[in-house]
Amino acid sequence: MKYLGIDYGSKRIGLAVSDEEGRIAFPREVVKSGGEKTLRYIERFCESEKIGAIILGQSLDYKGAPNPVQSAIANFKLQIESLTKLPVHYQSELWTSAEASRNTAKLNLDASAAALILQSYLDRRD
Image (cartoon, rainbow, N blue to C red; front, side):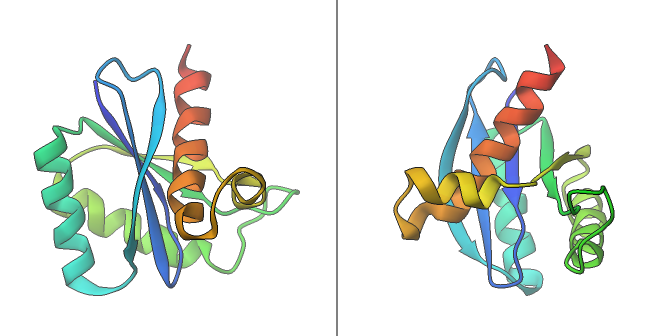
């Protein structure tokens, strides 16, 4: 099954996809955050890429408590589930942006963070 990884942010949303076997995550692109246009874009993306499930970064602090952005992420999760009819699973995004920034050009930071989120989920399944 092919997966979509999402790093949600208030300004930008990073997207990553897995291979067909759901083993390796690849950074894909960054889209502007906000509104129905973004949701519809992600819906079409899922259809065209034949995505079977979505992995969404969950923003928790190092103690496991929700960060301020988590309420927006939870709302985004509900919207994406409703629109795509796909299962959406959380995966911790703790330190993913910092890790991505060490290895990635600024422009692709959010997509790389999405790939790290997705790869963490894929690795955990095995």
